[in-house]
Image (cartoon, rainbow, N blue to C red; front, side):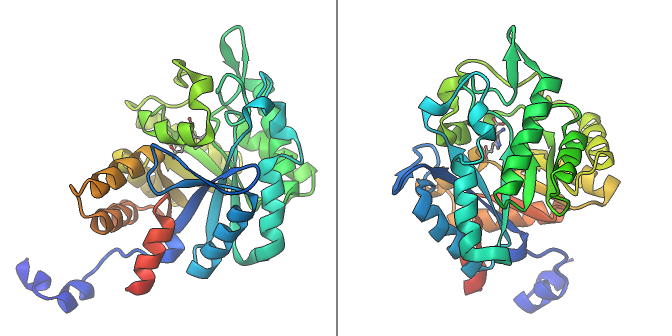
Length: 322
Ligand code: PBG
């Protein structure tokens, strides 16, 4: 076995998997107003103001990153029980989506999450009644949120809410509103994970959620067959691509989904995974560039067509340097 590993050229010759800038999706946090605000639990990641987010989008284009995913840190005063700011056509993500599209047009894809947690005073992804997250009424609001976001110019709607039946309902709502070309990237196999902690700090939903959890709609980490059932339903309902989330602890799911369905499959290297690697690198315990590239390559080897990662810009710069 060692003959094919003996030199750099020999290793390159037999390489099965490679990482390219085309594999990267860059998640970005946006806040109202201007400036940049560091997120304590995500070293190196800032919430960006409305001008700064446009600059970041232009940087993505310049680096060759195909798409960004925008997440709003909503003003706490705008959060309500019914999360109605989610369907305001002039809310923060809609405003910045228009501003970015004015600058970059079709040279960059914009992905917007569909879920109520950035807007709800209880921090849940759906509407809550008698302490329960209610499915069908939530789906109606998610449909309105999708249409509003598509009208603002977003290219891919990414439902991250894990309600039942939402993909089919959102597809019908988008089509009825004339948004036939807007794609749906379903967070199909999304687990109830403790690795989302820093994200909830970044969008400010951690305080709203408090000690509550999302286990009645996100999947249990013990489940694998259930992920296959979720993906099958979402594809049947009209998803254009599917996502597995978190990433590194769930590469078995990525591999199973890709092998079973052969559809465009994405994985999310979530906030806690980034924080773990970046924190250890900053402490000098790991080689930051090396673990970043090794982890992203591992997603590709497992079968992912692309990775949502807070390392996207760093990885793109590294790839450009060669
Ligand atoms: C919102 C949403 C979450 C993430 C993406 N969309 C958090 C959650 O479900 O609580 C997590 C992303 C990350 O941790 O990087 N529904």
